[in-house]
Image (cartoon, rainbow, N blue to C red; front, side, top):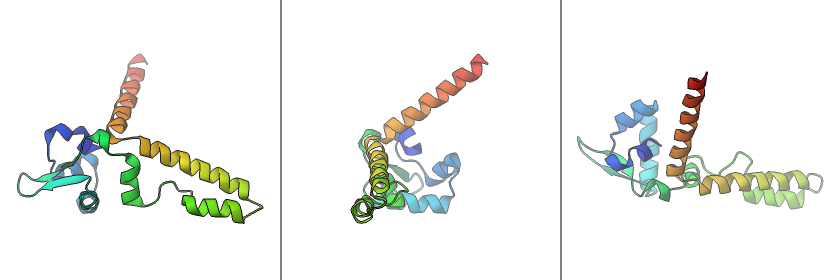
Length: 136
């Protein structure tokens, strides 16, 4: 999200992201390298170097990045397993089918949400909280 907010500014040094997002630098380096290798980020070396999004934030889905970092979406297992169990486990087939639908809805929502949308949502929530605080 920090790279989305700073997209127009160009490359951002790792230490700046680390400090602003309160992410340990070594951990952040691993994530940034993974995203660079997946062609989501690009980097510049040197004193003025850092990372930036390769494409506009509207072009990268949250689902894609989560899959890269954490593996399959949703804590409800993967779709193939849930589909198999909805067929194999006669006693619990309805439960597995429901979990599959929940998993698919979560995946669809994350895949349809890009980083630009996510940052705008965050801004909207913050603004509503400020307005509510002023109203008190």
